[in-house]
Structures are given as C-alpha cells and as structure tokens.
Image (cartoon, rainbow, N blue to C red; front, side, top):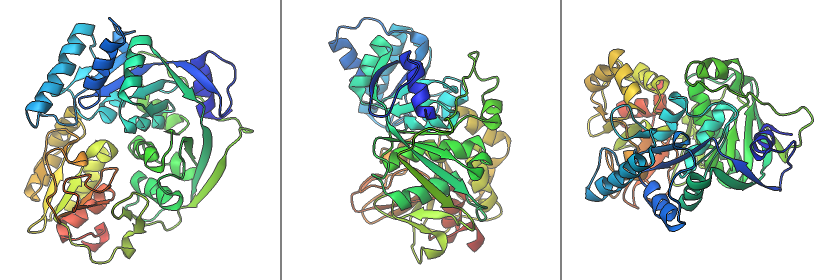
Length: 417
C-alpha cells in the first residue's frame, strides 16, 4: 500500500484498503474556523447532537477575519467562542497564543505523524507534511465529525512526485509546488493523493514541506503527503505527548502516475493571474509593476519565511507607491520575529507588519486590492477577485521574490536587487 492507503486502513480498523474503496475512519482531529465553524455549529444542532465526541480532538481557530474586521466577523467569532466554551473545547484560539490555523495546529502538536484529520478549510492538506492524512471538507462533514468522531472517504489513487537535482539560488518549497502545478494544472491531481519524495524533499526543512503540502489542493488533490523521516520526527519531538506513527509506502505500492521533476538549475517561480498553474521562471516574468506585496499566510507565514524576506529587505527600502504587508503566521512567530529583530528590520524597510490573520489572502482585510491594482503574494491562490476587486491581479511567489519585488516596485528576483 501507499502511505495514504496505510493511514486510511489504520483509521478504518482494517489490514488493507485499495484505491476506489469507500471506508469510514476514526478521526484524530476535526478543525473549523471563523468562516466555516458557524455553519458547522448550526448543522451540529440541526442533527440533534448535544456534545462533541471528544473536546480534546476538536480545534476551533478564528483566523480569517481576526482581529474582527466588522460586526459580522465579531458575531461569527463570538458564536465560535461560545460554542467552544459550551463544549469544553480547549483548543480554541483567536488572539493571544493564536494565529493562522494551519500554522498553529502543527506547532502546538495537535497533529502528528499517523493522524487522520479533517478540517472545514481546503488547506487542511498542509498537515500531510507530517506524514498524516489531512484533507479539507465542507462544514456539514465537519459537523458530523465533531458529533461522531468519524468521516467516510473514497480511498484516493496516489500520484508520486519525485524531485531530483540541485535547485538554483533562492528556490524554496513554494517554487517546487508551483513548478508541479505549472506542469499538471489545477485539476491535474483531482481527488488523488500527491506523495512528494526524492532527494530535494529529503533536504527540505519542515517549513518548506508544509508549504508544498499546503498547495496540494491547488492541483486538485485530495491530500498531499510526505513520509516522515528524521527531520519530521525531530521537529515533532516535544510538541505532543502522543507517540507518532511513522508510515511509508511499500516498495511495490501501486501509483496512478509517477512524475519526475528535475530541479537542476530551477529558478524561483511566479504564478500569473488568474490560476496557480500559470507559472513562469523569474527570468521570464518581464516588466510587471506592482502596487502591493504580501508576505505571510498559511503557505508562507512561518519564521523561516520571514527570515528569507528579511535577507532581501535588510538595508533596503520598499519602493515608493508600494505597500509591503508582512503577516507572521502566529502570535508565537510574531514574538520570536520581534526578538530576532526582524520586525524592526521590516518597519525600517517601510513594511507594514500585521497581527496574525488570513486577511488579504481571501480579500477580507489588511490589504484588499482596488480595481486595477496588482499584488505579488506568498499566498496560495490568485483567482479572479481573490484579494479584492474582480479587476485586480494577484501573482504568487516565494517570500524572497515578494520582498525583492517590494523593493523594485515590480516583480523581481532577489538577485535583481
């Protein structure tokens, strides 16, 4: 079996499962946020449920419009907060000690290798970087999961993606996943598991692995996954009192497809509007002026991402007329970035540093675009109107490219500045 099949078999209490089968699995964690939890709470009530299956295995994170952007957001957050208190859910965060859900849940040890997780947010697939099966679901499925501790799945076929070779300078996990999506398209892995492997993956820190799995959904995948290794287990150590279960695909596992990506000389990638598949190397971008740069999000809001941006911004200043918004992925990351002097560096460079939030990623606040404006962002989606006005544009890139672009006033690589 593949690692995805092994995880689902284990959670279903079976020795073996095969792609295409329907299975009912026990869940290690159910997640919802300030956008999706209110709907899930209503459905939870509608089905007659009175208590969640296990308060310790529910996570409710208010991150999309927090700090509250308007009365509606405040009302949504209060509804989630009240439900968490009523159900005894201790894994509730909205401000202090909180942050963006897909960053804080692994950091706080709520997801570890071997887990099966559902979340009412499509980027729940992020946790596959830990060797967990993690996938996004609708709010109704999240409600059922909160009530029963179970969810049904069709076991996905697996596509293996093997990265080899020595990438060029400033290439990160963001570039590796954009390179894949550029090759197979946004529907290229629809309802399939993307299993990432190879020497390039082996050499990646956890931050890069999280970024890759985060954007598996941008290729249409059911989940993205990387088998745990020494890097994974070292990162997990001390974060949870549960014992990780490190699984790996068998040598004779069946794959629907095998994709080999030669990273030799790979340069930073930029996804043009209005799909993540519209990728080009930084040398092929041409003259693209920008109005805004966003560094953060569940894709690239980790401390390592902020450090990369800081390397480019140090001793430089954001171009006149450009807004460069830096959003640490969590309260803890914001605090550490402050201690390291990164926040001061960003402010001296003319950046705007936000409290942790999804905010501009989905056009809610802290960087909404007007008609005709153009942004480069480390976020994961650049659909029409994603960051604001339908006639605005979003380009996707890694933190170093976003920082360099802020300095240049146009899309540029670090070596250009």
